[in-house]
Length: 127
Image (cartoon, rainbow, N blue to C red; front, side, top):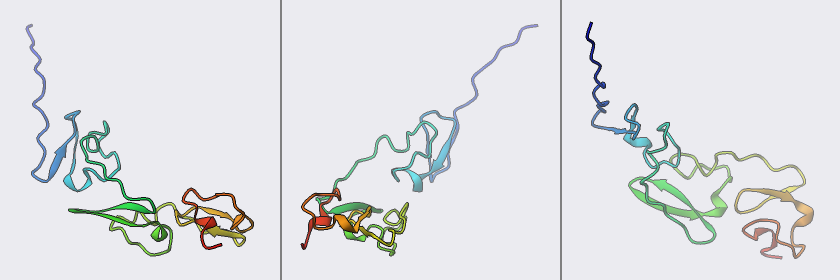
């Protein structure tokens, strides 16, 4: 008996889909360059242009436009980015804590003590 095996044809993705390099998976174009690996091999994020914002601001994608928003909008209870990233992973600060402009919490006892406790130095501003 003589059998021959051929490779299956490459996966065909739809018009609004991105074919991952592994060629075994298609993902929606909407999730390409969204800072999350949707392809199992991560190729939906590999060719993306990265943007940086000035100090005191964070990147908030609003495709097709790029926005840099104030750090004070992170974890402020208002969803400013369309994907909600400015409120993702936020926790309430404790009763004896204050919030850095970057969103992190720190002990109120450390405010205005001359030592930077927030990565953005917001615990020492306005003292």
